Structures are given as C-alpha cells and as structure tokens.
Image (cartoon, rainbow, N blue to C red):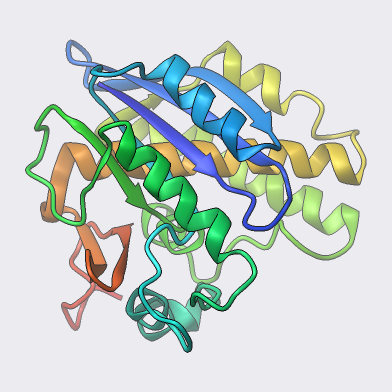
Length: 255
C-alpha cells in the first residue's frame, strides 16, 4: 500500500508532494519521494506515475475537494473551529463562491476519475484506492500533543525557521514511535539539510514538502487504524476532514 500526501496550492501556488510506502513486514512507512509542482495537471500526472491504476493507495489532500455549499462555511470547517479553535487550528472557510473552489474540487474529481474513492469511513487496512481531505494543523496538535499549533507559516524568517525546526524534531522523534512508524531515511535528510541557512522562498518550498509528508502520514494512519484512532469531521455530502484522535475528540476527556 502506498500513501500520497498533497499540500495543494489552493489558488496558484506550488504544491508539495510526498510518497510513503508501507511495509507489511515491519508495519513501517518509508519516504519514497518528495516533489514540488505548480500545475494541477502535472500533480495528477505525478499521482498517475507513483500510483498507476489499479495499484492500491490512498491520496491525502490538504484542500477542500468537496464543496457542496454556494455560500457560508462547510460543516467540516465549522467543526475544526469547534474542536481545535483553542489550539489556533481552525481551517479557512470554503464555499463555491471562493476563487479557489474550481481548482480544489477539480482535483477531487480528477482523483475520483482514476478510481480514488472518497473515504470518510474506513475499514482499517482494507486494500483499495482512496482519497481523503486532511488538515495538517489539527493533525499535528493530536499526533504531537501540542498546546498550540506550530507557527512556521508566517512571521519573521528567524521565527519561521525555528518553528520549522521544531516541527522537524517532532517528525524525527514522534512519528517513528507511532504505529505505523515512519522511517527517517536519506530522502528526509536531503530535504531538511538546507533549513538552517536558506532564505524565504526556499524555506517555503521545504515547508510545503514537509506538510505533504504530514498529509501522507495522516492518510496512512487513517488506513491503518480507521475510526479506532481517528475522527471524521463532516461527511461525504457536506465535505469532511480526517483528523487523528488517539482518544476520540467527542469524549469530554480527550482534549
């Protein structure tokens, strides 16, 4: 089973891409590839290359690929604010009048045309071709037991760099300790090697690919555990976001 993470550029920005490969023998995930692409058609072609039909795999996308509402806010967006607002991890509202809507929903349709069915519910470890929507900030809050999101997206360069290095530390220490475990290999070391010295645009490109890694890992965690250790915010009709939840977030004691 393979897992693709797409940190999708909602409007015109580049998208970070990551491919993880699952080992049944070790119950571990190996980083097989990172990439960065601008054109959505090239992104879909990349998915075709790493997951040719009918090979089994899951694509986890950080973007609203299902938007049924003409105005206002989707159900999953509201739920991120309800459960994760206090962590500063509520997501941006999506509706069909937003300029990004045609671009993000097209990606969902393109993946469906390739046999990647939406999976707001999952039978754990069932082989197939799936796609899900994810959101890295609440996922990191859950996986890394954070009091607040890691603020590596905005601010002064030095602050962003320090926060990104903090995120890198969590990836290297916590994800290898979970099940399925992430193997920290040369692909990872090559990606992060320049972080200490690079300036704004290059740092952003590294951020995008690390976000894609988080997306891919959340996809693998969803496939591996299903609803036992994850929560679906929303549903197929309203749109949904999959969030890891070692203790279910509708339990009063979980957050």
